[in-house]
Amino acid sequence: MGTEKEQARNLGQKTHSVKLKYVKLGYHYLISNAMYLFLLPIIIALGHLSVEDIAQLFQQFDLGLVSGTLVCTALTVCLVTLYFSWRPRDVYLLDFSCFKPDPSLMCNRETFMRQLEKAANFSDELLKFNQKIIERSGYGQKTYAPKAALEDPPVATMWKCREEVEMVVFGAVDELLAKTRVNVKDIGILVVNCSLFNPTPSLSAMVVNRYKLRGNILSYSLGGMGCSAGIIAVDLAKRLLQDQANTYALVVSTEAMTLNWYGGTNKSMLITNCLFRLGGAAVLLTNKSSERRRSKYQLMHTLRTHKGGDDKSYRCVMQQEDDDGHIGVKLSRDLLPVAGDAIKTNITMLGPLVLPISEQILFLANVVGRRLLRMKIKQYVPDFKLAFEHICIHAGGRAVLDEIEKNLDLTKWHMEPSRMTLYRFGNTSSSSLWYELAYTEAKGRVRRGDRVWQIAFGSGFKCNSAVWRAIRSVDPAKETNPWIDEIDEYPVIVPEVQPVLAE
Image 1 (cartoon, rainbow, N blue to C red):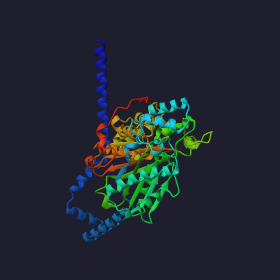
Image 2: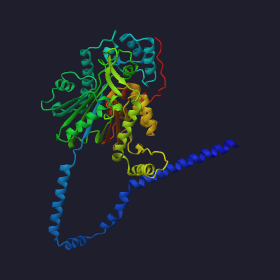
Image 3: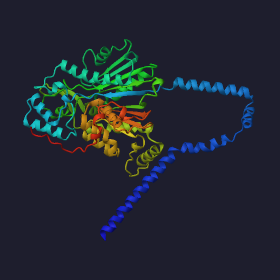
Image 4: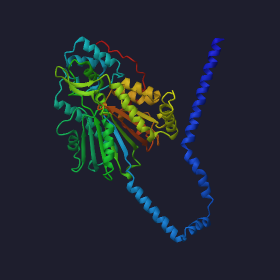
């Protein structure tokens, strides 16, 4: 009897939940289309006007039909000219490519631990600490490491680091140029971002030299800007494209691992050894209206949030020396709360740009209730699933992805590209967003009109977003990307702990 009552109660709760869902959906459509409902009577009324009615309207203003027509035409031409003169130039993403290293550079968990023992004289305690991190990282057995890290013994030199960067960057750019068939002499803007390796000549100069780009190219190298620098590079290119008409912008995002291995004993600095993996991406943007048809996406918004004014935020990810003089990147215990605060600030600013008006009204009503009326109600989290079909969250680590999924109430489907990128390629820093978008394309999920949200966070502390709209559907059968030949193997279930097997 008790079981039947419990089942009836559960059924009632489910029915109530379904009703609320459809009530909210109806509310969303009503508010979203309120403007059209308001204009409908006006449009109907105007539709009943005859030529004689319009002529009488001109006569009331003491204008002849010919004079009135000329005035209206001149005004229309003037307004259209002003509109196109002041309107920002549309920016399109022609295509992008992600570098897929040679299988010889694969680094599974067992290889990582073996090379770790060879690279430094770690105690058993520190080896167990590293093993614990790698077992809980959410990484699979096919991530990649640079050649220098896999040698016996591992040896890091400036030359080997250059070789690593050249392999990744040239590999990604070569594939991109082959896909787009753009003449390199037509590229007017170049932005390269790499946080921890900034040699002389710069990495942008390295790209100019390799592809013999034109002498008046606007080239920039962004260093020390962390895992969110890929969106910063896109934002910079977008701003430059507003001033340079009919041109292309090449954006390259990567990170160099060879010279940034930490060999000390500070646990907060050892974590980055376990996290970062080999990878890079190249993106071709343009403001040419003639290229719209064959472009994949249009850039709708970029939004940058910088929390560096706060000391805790500024110091939570910092490259420094330990007590023994070993250089590494220290991650503080404040990293997760700092990241959460930066993400919250960023999405609060992004909301008014992308959320439907129905969600904005609910959010505003909640703020008024909590802050002005002192009502004890839970903070309302807008439903960003109504604003985007696809979400690419920087694959910085399992814990961060878990928190974002929970706080934004995202589905497993929305999180799949980020989690599978973390599993297959690891944390490739600023390029991870493009591996995630490549995953979405390889699955055949991108349809014309779909909205894509890329959000990344990194040292500084910064959180940045880019919003794209698909101009056309992407056919995976015609794509070349790192997932295509193995996409049917994913998604996979990733255990909480993946043990390192004894060799």
